[in-house]
Structure formats: structure tokens, C-alpha cells
Image 1 (cartoon, helix red, strand yellow):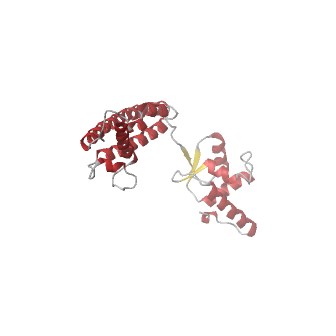
Image 2: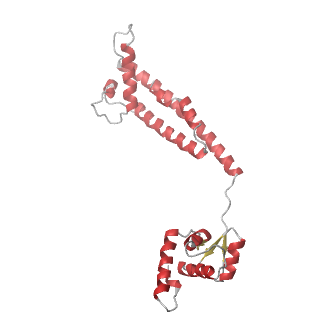
Length: 233
């Protein structure tokens, strides 16, 4: 049988190699998709004699390697039988083909059962280990000392509703006044990325922060006038 390539015991053994239920579900859905493809190939109406579907150098729409292999095996088994003097006829091939489709569908039903079990296990695990809700601290005004205290006292990130330039100015001021230990020029962009989100609750891209911070420093070095950080977006 061509269904030997989709042996349910092999599938179950492969399933045990995955630790996460999401990985198991991904594998099961992949196998189900493959089985459905083969069933469509076997079950579709045939416009040519079935023996033609086993020939390599003929392109037939809707044909597949599994069907080729299956038909070839039927002819091979007839040749190896000393009591059988003829090749299997169209009627016999059709009957064997329908029987094979039934076997494929049985395997699909077993996979559906495994999918339901994996879904159930994943739901139980999710219920037992719910993801913590993200909470952010909102601030009404830019108070450097107060924000530094909030960062030291809380694990939650601060929601920043002002420009990224003003955020960099804040972090730079906190660094200059040494309000937070170990904050320095080299890790300031990472500090912002780790501790702040924008008004849409999106994390600040480290690459973007580094770029704006570099512009900020160059502007300070090259200008003696006051910088309006609101324009650093």
C-alpha cells in the first residue's frame, strides 16, 4: 500500500519528538494537508486508463507520485504471483484504488483525533500558565527625578507620550545627574529600549534610538544654542 509512507505509528512516534503542543499541532496539520492532497489525487475522476498514471514520461493533470507508486506496486505484485498470468485490469485497479482511499481517510481521521487532543492539552496548559498582562506606567509631566525613581521602584515600563528626542534628553539628564546606577553613554539607547514604550505600547527599536541619539550628540557637540528636542522624531 502507498499508505505505508503515512503509517500512523510512524506519525505518532514522530509526534513524540516535539516538546511543545504548538509544534505537535504544526506537524499534525502538515501531515493532514499532505494526506488531503493524496486523497484528492486518488479520488479524482480519471480521464485515462489507470496504468497510464504510472508512466514517468507522461504529464497528466492531477497525477502524483503516490498514485504512480501505488499502480506500479499492483503490477509488480501480479508479476511476482506465479498463478496470475495477466496484468490487473482497469476494474481491479479501480477497486484497489478506492480501498486505498479508504485507508488514507482512516489515517486522516486518526490525525484529526490527535489534533483535538493536542488542542485540548494546549488549552489546559494555557489556562494553568496564563501570560501576565502587560502594564505600563503613564506619566503626566517630564520630571527627571520622579521618572528615575519610578524606574528603580517598578518592573513595569513607562509609556512615553512625547517625542523620542525628549526621551533621549530625559535619559541623558538622568545619566548626567547619576540618578540611576550604571547608566552611561554607551548603554543609554539600550536603557531606553528596555524601559520605555511609545503611546501605542510599542517598544522603541534599539536601532532607531541609537540613530537619534547619535544625531542628538552631534547636535550638542556642534551647537552652542539650546536644542529643541521635540523635533527629534
